[in-house]
Image 1: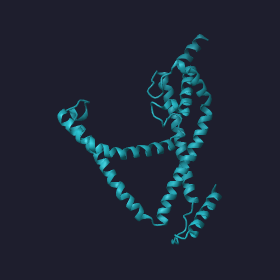
Image 2: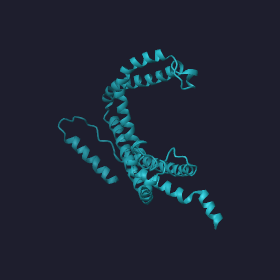
Image 3: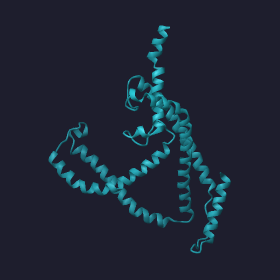
Image 4: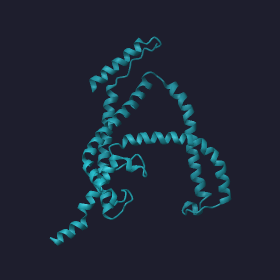
Length: 252
């Protein structure tokens, strides 16, 4: 891959040099260093995620042994075939999702690092500053609004300083909700963009985790990787339950 990085760098440099509208004498930043750094960080992230996956397998097995269905969907008799096929796919999906997650993380980090390198090399700070002038005020308003809501909820609208989920000052709360509606309608536009950004970044960094579904709780059954994980957990619980093994050992 490294020779291709050098060729890509030369190609970009030639395009900039041959451009009539470009008067800059800056050279294109070296792409090898950002790629190596992205590969190092991406590999570390994937290793950590796989270790967390192994810990989740152990924790989820113990939960299913105790009958705790808080993380794994409850076993349903009509889905036994789905659990069996999911158990078939678990090992292969784990390798494929880990490799695909590594590629996505490295690509994402490489783009971010190259962008930072371009900003520093070509001195594009005025452009970044002009963008931040519009972004930072919205961020400050959003976070100040969130902090203000927590303070009001604790000291004004909940009893016992928020230790009890019981509404206090209901009339004032109704007035506050009326005026708060218009501001939240504006902040909701920013919140929706932030939600989309978090979903994309979270999906990239958690691609190698079969125990995590980026589709959410109600749509997690659409995720083939999560279905394979659930099938593996339910199959292991059925055949490796400690009480079952002890009972079988006593019979033998």
